[in-house]
Length: 159
Image 1 (cartoon, rainbow, N blue to C red):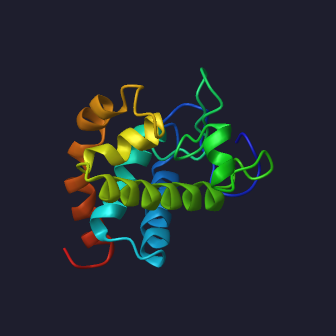
Image 2 (image 1 turned 135 degrees about the vertical axis):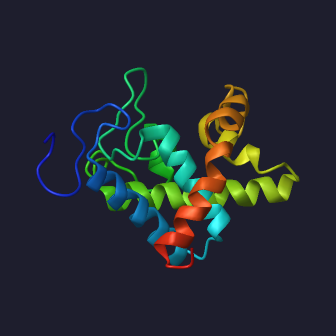
């Protein structure tokens, strides 16, 4: 393990975490999203973001930037959502940041009258929307939202 305690991945690579760790991360995102009043669609979207960004590995880190954790927050954005050097590898802080950021991005999309595909574009690019996030989201995030919607229903025993 990279760090003692808590849910850990096997390495800094996206997706390199045991099935148990990945399931625990998914369940935590569903629980925190529900507590924050997100719709199932919004939670499914947050799951699709985490799947693409980290493969549900809380220890994932980018080689090319400061991005880390389930939501792959760079230092600048992470700081706005309570991520610090002290809690960067803490799953609770990572999930809270992902949920809060996703809620904010849904709000921005509604205010601006954009389609939901822009929620990931904002996550990836920031407000400038100039770093290719829209195309990445359409290809690697949006197709997983319906799948995660089904998983949420199963998790809640509503399948």
